[in-house]
Length: 306
Ligand code: ATP
Image 1: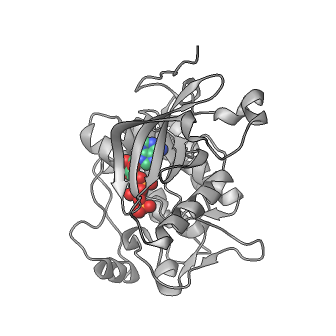
Image 2: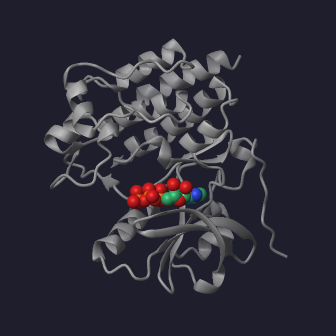
């Protein structure tokens, strides 16, 4: 009889069933086809989120061996905007190529009443909302989560993908001790002859998370993701506050150009505020890469964890 496995709010990454992903099981791998049949999916009414594209709901994905709780992104049926479908497909194509414990994995795609993207479930939802509601979470616990995000980003950097929408709202929690990066709607693979992606024009962009070279030259690289990661760290140690509160995008850009940066959140350790400021180095080449950001976080976390 297939079973749905349970993990508690406090489980560590390796004790959850989303650490390794389902395709490590040789039997499932043999049958791996990213196309999912509609009868393998049970959709619940529980809505996890919604957006332009449609809704994200909880569901159950049935395989021969198990039943797994999943998140399903359902494209709006009445969407007559072809770019919405293209965006979902592009998100699916990027996710299909990624396999890391700190990144939400795509399980497959199902063509049914509408297009359905099936993903691993991160039940505790977005990091900023979780921390705003749970202010008793320790600073060490926040560092543990932020370090996991840096491991996921180091993997993206090594594999030449840029995320382009890294923010606390796009970090989802599987448990209080396990974070995963999500929302690859803006992500791009970087061509081997370049180290950045050049956007053709400005879009509906999260300006407050973007590095100067994104805004000034439409250039996106792992280094511009590092800038966004600094803002994400600020959001995390502020327990879900909005960055540059009350300011307009243009005012933020002017502030950055004038060499000013956000202040240290009250509960943020000074060593980690220093790291945040390094992530906000104006010059792209001088800004650290995720390989060194991850190492600093790892050293700091394991020092305080003693
Ligand atoms: P856009 O593509 O326009 O940026 P969005 O950012 O609103 O859309 P998502 O972040 O992909 O879309 O999903 C919306 C919400 O659904 C998330 O904020 C989160 O609350 C929920 N959600 C998405 N994926 C998952 C998941 N794998 N597990 C749990 N909840 C999820």
